[in-house]
Length: 322
Ligand code: SR1
Image (cartoon, rainbow, N blue to C red; front, side, top):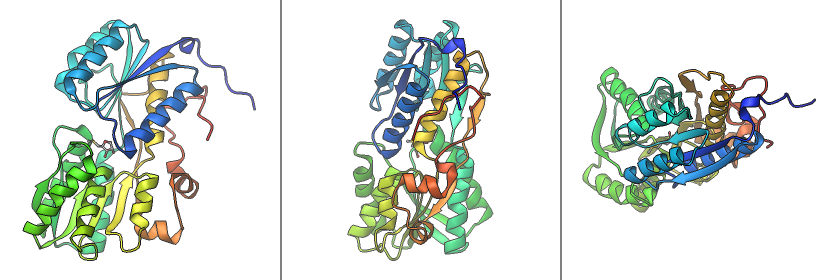
C-alpha cells in the first residue's frame, strides 16, 4: 500500500527538542523515538539538552525561538523556568507541545503516560502481593509532574489502606541517579528494618533500590514496585532472586514518537487535543519469566501496547519502521 500524502504544513519544517533531563534508559529510548518519528515525517530535528539545569533549559528554549524553529517539543523541566518563554514561542507562531512539563498554556498540548493509572497499577500489584499492611520506603523527588501525579495516587492509597505506612521518604535525581539513590536507600534500610516494600516510581530509583537491597542482603525480604520499563530493567527484574517484582509503564520510545506526532499535527493545522494520554501496562517479574521476555522488542511482540500507541495518529501519519 502507498503511504498517504503528508499535509503541506509539514514540508521543510524544523523542530527542536528542548529537554531538561536526559540520563537514564527512559530518556535515551524517548530520544530514539523522537528521532525515528521526526525522520519518518521528514522533519529536521535539533536536540537541546539542558542536563538538569533549569536556567540552561530556559536559555535553550530562547535559542530555539530565536533560531526560528517551526515547532518545539518541551520535555521535562519546571513551570516557573519555561512558562513565559513557552508563551513567547506560541505568540511568535511556533507550535509547541510538552511532555511531562506543564507550561500552563492552553495552546500547548500536554503529553503524558496516564501517570495516575500507572501508579494505580503498581500499587494494586503491591496490595495483591503483600496484603493491606506493610511498611514502605518511598523514593520521591518533588517538582516533576509525572512523579507528583503518581504521588497523588499513593496519598489516596495510604488513606484507603491505613495499614500501608510510609516509614521513610528519600530520593534524588543527582547523576548517576541509580547510584545516588542506592546510597540513600542503604541508610534508609539500616534505619528502618520494618520496610518490606520499596515504592520507586521511576526506574532509575528502582535500580538504586535494587543495588542497596542486594548489598544489604535483603533482596528476599523487601520487594520493589516501580514505574517504567527498558531492556536493562527487564534484565534486572529477571535476575535470579531479584527484589524488583513489578513495574508499570509505557514504551518510552513510543512516548517520543507520540510527542512528535502531536507536534506534527499542530504543524499540519490539526489539533491533537489538550491532553495526549498514553495508557500504561503492568509488567510483573512473573510475566517476564513465564513468557521468557528478554527485551523491549519481545515485550512489544507479546504486549502490543508496547509496540504502538493509537493516539495522535491521523490517517496521513507515517510511522517509523521497526
Ligand atoms: C524525574 S521524572 C522521571 C519520569 O519521567 C517519565 O515520566 C518517566 O516515566 C520517569 O519515571
